[in-house]
Amino acid sequence: MSNVNSYKDLLVWQKAMVIVDEVYRLAKDFPREEMYALSDQVRRSSVSIPSNIAEGWGRDSSQSYKHFLRIARGSLFELETQVEIAFRQGFIKAETVEKVNGLITEESKMLTAFINSINDRNKDGK
Image 1 (tube, rainbow, N blue to C red):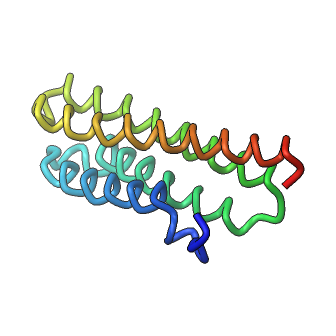
Image 2: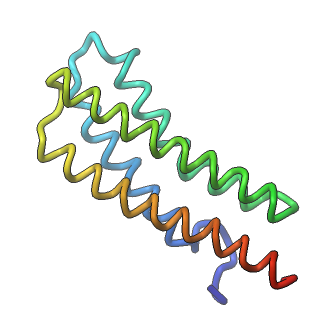
C-alpha cells in the first residue's frame, strides 16, 4: 500500500467501479416502467459504494474513514437485495445475478479487510 497516493489507487475503489459499470449495463435491460424505480435505485446504490470510499479518503480521521467504508458496505448489501428483487421480478437472468453477486462478495470481503486493517493500525498507534 506504499504507492497509494489517492483513493483511485485503492483496489477496493477500483473493484467498486467495476460493480458500477456492471450495474449500469444490467439496468439498461430493465423494463421502461422501472426507469425511475428499481432501475434508478440499483444505479444509486452501486454509485454509493465507490463514492463513499472516496469521501472517506478525504476525511481527517481513521474513525471517520471507517464510518464511510461502513456506509459503502451497507450500500453493497442494499445493491445485493435490489439485484435479488430484479431477479424475482424477471428483469434479469440468473447468470447476471451470479456475476453481480460474485463481484459483491469480493467487494464485501475487501471492504471488511480494509476496515479491519484501519482498526489494527489504530490499535498499534499508527
